[in-house]
Length: 169
Image (cartoon, rainbow, N blue to C red):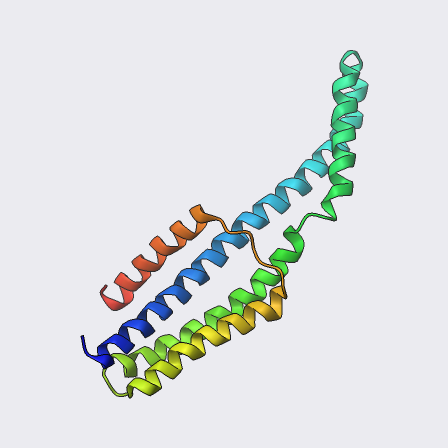
């Protein structure tokens, strides 16, 4: 394998990883939104129905007391759950990653056609990696998102479909 071809392959893998990370963040955001909405719905339903339920099922008052206590506990703990903070960070990261992806996909033509030197391709590859890292640090700081293997596997499958549809594999 020639060095130019090797540089093209590395660039392509970097581009593929960026696509997979965009997909992963979309899935992560979707899951986090679902959890956040579920918690909010639980709180809304329990707070409005527990008073009504208490009046109707006075014989099962211990169940309703448990539901009310659970809702109060969730309400207090909710402020410490990371979902709202993660949603904000993920949406900002996602927006910047999508911009990077669009820009570096456009650059792929010159890479694939051999219009760039190995040094230029290498520089582009490291620009992608550097900008990804800067974006993550800017929006997450020293925090990280807990890894979710199932989501990443699904994101990679989606990235492969995307690559096959737009670049023929």
